[in-house]
Length: 86
Ligand SMILES: [Zn+2]
Image 1 (cartoon, helix red, strand yellow):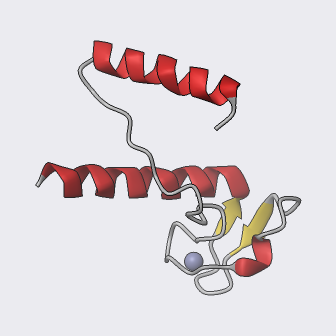
Image 2 (image 1 turned 120 degrees about the horizontal axis):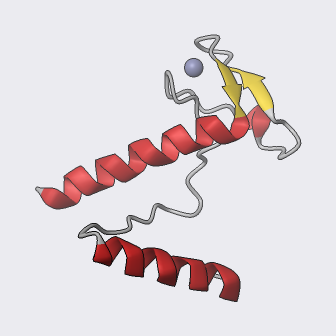
């Protein structure tokens, strides 16, 4: 973890504690930008970071790389939270 990112996480953790919540980390190797958030299909053809938009070959959903990744990260974070809350 870079120093700048470490500092960002430190501030985020401080703020989360202040507001009575917490930070959930997901696996850094989770392929968030390759998995279709609509159907779960893993599209390894979009591994290349230059691919900014893609269509899921399984369900046909159109994806913006970053928005798709954000939705996957949110889903994993919520699932992790629910799993840890049981
Ligand atoms: Zn799909």
